[in-house]
Image (tube, rainbow, N blue to C red):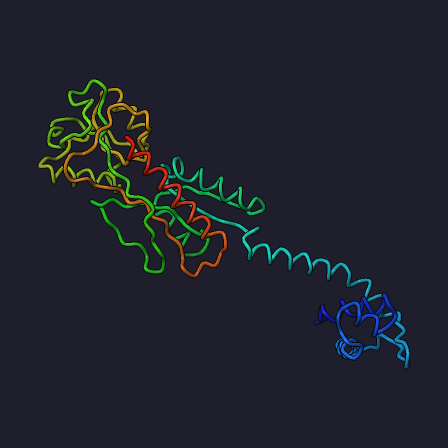
Length: 304
C-alpha cells in the first residue's frame, strides 16, 4: 500500500526538483527526503528520479504519480478533518429515544440546545415505551434512551447499561370541574373509592401502579375507560366520565381539577439509559442538557 506521507513528499520533490528544497518545505532533511523516496520506489518497484550529485530529475512515472495522488491525498485530508470534527463532537450523530410525555415536555429544549451548539451534527429522536427502546441502547443503534418506572411498579434495567435518574415525577389526581372534591389542593384517595376511574391499558405500568395505589388506600378501583393516550384520558375526565391519576408530565399546566395525593406521594421516575463504553462526544452534552431540562420542569411543579 502506498504511504500517503511518501506521496506528499513526492509531490514536493516534483514541484521543487530538489530533495533539499522539498525537505525545507516539509521540515525534513535532504537525507530524510531521499530515504522516503527510496522506500516509495521499492514499494512500486520502479525508479522515480534520475539522481545526480546536485539534482533529482523526476521520471515520467514520478510526474504521473504525483499528479494522480493529489485527489487521493485531498480526500484523505478531508477524512482527517471530518474525523477530528467527529472526535470533538462538532460533527457526527446523536441518536436518542424517549417516551411521549418526555418528548413533549423535556426533549424539545434538549434537542434545540444540542443543535445550537453543534449545528453540523446529525441529531435524531425516536419515540417508544421503555421496553421498546432498551434494546436499541444495548445494541448501539441508540446512544441513549429516556425511560420511566413507577415507585409502585419498579423494574430492573440491564446491568450493561447505566441508569441515571433525571426526575422524580409526582402523580396527580385529575377531577372533573363539577366533581365534589374539585378545587381541593390535596385529595385523600379513599374519598374516591366509589368513583369511576380512567387509566391506561391493563398491561401498563401506570395501570398496575393505580391498582396498587388504590389497594393501599383500601379499595379496588372501578375502571370504566382505558386509553394509552393521555390526551384522551384528560378529555374523558373533563367530560365528567371519571377520575384519573396521571404522572405530572402528562398534566398541562392549565389543566383544571388537578390535586396532589394526600399522605404517601408516589412518583414516576424518569431516567436516562446509556452504555458506559459509548465514546460519542455528543452524549455527555445531551445528558447535561437532559438534566437541566428536567430540573427546569421540576421547578415549575414546585411553584404550583
